[in-house]
Image 1 (cartoon, rainbow, N blue to C red):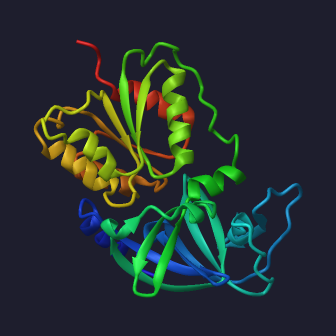
Image 2: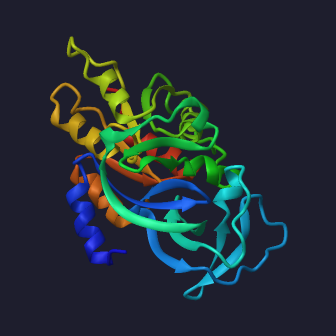
Length: 297
């Protein structure tokens, strides 16, 4: 794994380039990938402590460097047999402001891919909780829908929209861009709770097609709320294109990502985004939506 300094340097170079560095691993016989910038460290198998009333998909708790965290049984969440005790590797991750370990069979390598090579999975694969698949020489690598997986574990945790004002976004139209159906549902719930309207796009390319129309008259949006990690065109590159294009530059961009931390916020500002918010806290999102939407002239 890269050191903290190396990761920052690499991330700085990738932001806005529509590239991804991905850690690949196997769960049983299937290969999956995760953004390397969500990975804190790799830990050999160690003792698992069972927890009372633990959720489905949680094998128990592990203590790593003095910090206790849940161990996520990805295999069982995908409907497959759990890994055998004593086997596998723990991938410690920070996702949606939470630290947890993912239990995988083995780790393969870090590889750099273009988001253009990341595509929507076949319909049959979507049932396996994949947002996308990556074309590689070894075959297809599945990108897990972590929002969906963690929604099954951390459900009802800061996901209920807290009502600020039923009319706070009345008459406002917001473009919601996210490859996760679960994330789009949670965001749209916050918007409609305040009287706003929304249009959905499943990735940056689909969003840009709505914005960059041939007649140069984009659909009227008051705000763009976009994920960062998406097939075909990522959120950093979308934000940069929006701000570099005269007839869309006026639209505020809020990057809303499962990659938390000040450095991600710094990268969002560097590519021209107006706001950055780590997923997912409904109250914080609603507050930021109110700040981000321009006041009526």
